[in-house]
Image (cartoon, rainbow, N blue to C red):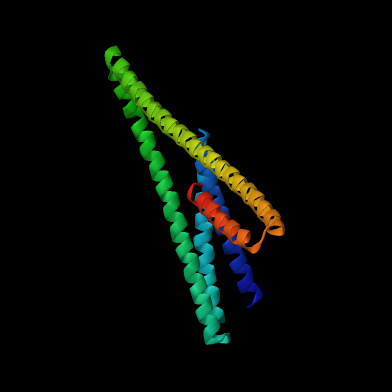
Length: 217
């Protein structure tokens, strides 16, 4: 890539970034109620410069195309077309913003005239309607907040109930384990002191007790 071509590309890219930045600044000034006529003039000047730079880039490409490979020529043509597309997009965006401003400025006197022509009763009614609309929106917001509040409370109640149920289940399991430990200890004591006959009887009794614990748990 030749230095002249590279420098031309860099200038166009920086110019595009500058124009986009200034368009955003114009919108910010407009929203803030500040004057933006000066920056509008700067944007128009930059758009004119961008048109000229794109033309110069096209002329430079024609001068150098005989020294370039076909692939490089195609790459440069695509780059040039991309710049043209960005220029058209930026220009359309700026024109649209200017047109919207003019329409707003034209509509403002009409709105003021309509307000001036309203009687006191009409002005009062208009203000009352606006107040009612605001109250309606506020009521809807409060209702949504209450729904969220109650939903949160229900969730907390459900969680607390589940915690209590788990605690009771743990207590029941602990009690059953203690009972089983007691029975086993008695069973071991009896085994050490009883004959085989008694051993069979005790085994049967323990099985019955285990079934009772399981059934009535």
